[in-house]
Image 1 (cartoon, rainbow, N blue to C red):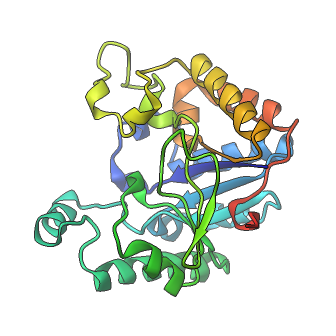
Image 2: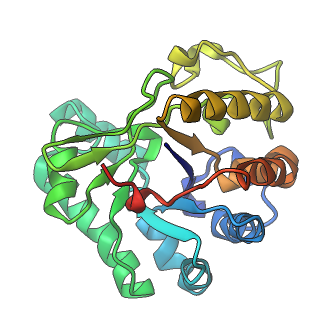
Length: 264
């Protein structure tokens, strides 16, 4: 059994709703997040966009020096500008565009992290979980084995397929479901939830944490791999990391691992 705590980190030019409520940048939020995780002895895998590393390399170096942290890739641009990736989708049926374009962007992300941080990534999650038929092979070709784009509560196990190790997010993700910032009970559109398979509408930070604890216990008791998605930005906007501190305090009772240490 394994527990993997993960989060995604983006460049500020993404212009997401959460970024309007942050005290600084998402990378600065990620640094606070890793400080808390380090205090409680919890291992974390954070997926960074390549552009966020290019723009804030000094702080990213401080993050990657922590012994309990793994950095993974999260695309380079996070599908911005949106119009370009909309054109890709219309022309090629996928937001990634053709094989060569997707391969180029994966390499660009790898190089941004390698060149700035002297760190070679082995794990990957696409922005918004968007992947296509080419993604696993492209990742493997570029030395990335661990792939975390699949989401749903029924995936209690990680698995190996054609050299890739698939590590699904199987616990209620924070960003889509937790009331925070501009996402309130009054304006949450349940039709826009990324993964209706969780059969949940919006929840408070407190109820999200209760759900996470129950799910972790269930998956661990069944010798599965519990993969938590808790974004640094969301955890800051939600309640200035109070819920995240409680989560880490709970997880310190278990053995957490970084994604690249998962052995199958």
